[in-house]
Image (cartoon, rainbow, N blue to C red; front, side, top):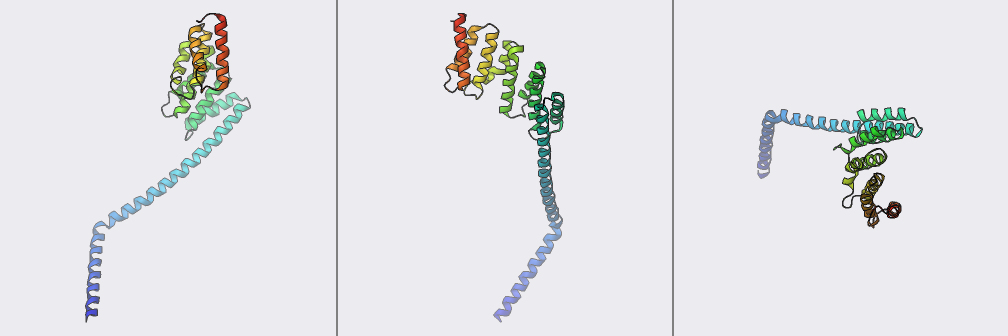
Length: 223
């Protein structure tokens, strides 16, 4: 009898659960299906975006390498056109890389003003990595040593000279050379001495700074 009662109770519980399930399903079934569909669609969309992004990045990489090859072969106009096209529709970091390389091609062609302007655009691009922006500032500063004023070089390079910035000594060298070219031996000496006093300065940079300090001392134009 006890066994029969247990079976009966189980059947009643199962029926109650079944009723509750039917009630819940009739109330929330469409919502559950909708959520499930959204999950499937979102997952498929994410996978599709991953594939699209990977495919585009790979294609942009191939185009970048092809443009580099043109540059190495001395086909500057073709390389410049390829880099500029990649700036417009490339994916990932390739548009910024292409802009940097395009600036280098302009410098190779002798278009210093265009190269400086292109490097300045990279330096002012907040979406570009900080390291790339700093390199662009430094490249622009070095180009301006021959074609620009000390103030123009300073506007590009002086921000890189502070603290433990990785490019500080190259920036100091650019500023020292620009000041030397302008005949400002006192300021030039200050920048070259800052390199000489920096124990972390690369040996080749430190050696060049010492040569310039010796030249300035020989000139007698700086105390």
